[in-house]
Length: 93
Image 1 (cartoon, rainbow, N blue to C red):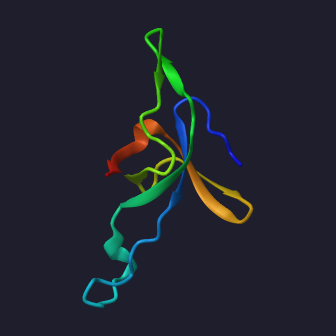
Image 2: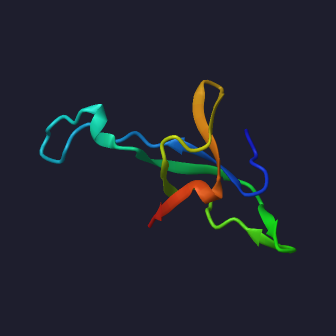
Image 3: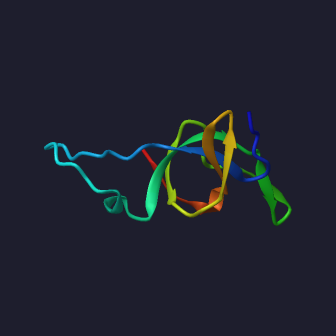
């Protein structure tokens, strides 16, 4: 498995729903420029102004990021994305 360093996180995309609750099929363009991802692994944190700061994002959090953030990697035929914690727009609670 991949272990991110510093404040980087490893995420896996969660497939967007292709249908509305009423059963209408949605085109791919509707998904917009953000996506939901599940956090698979996190780095330990980083040093800011001489003090160590832990990462805020935790494993299994569902986060929203810009679709074009980070770098895509493939491990055992599964696609992941590695990005900085600063690229996370929100955590879904």
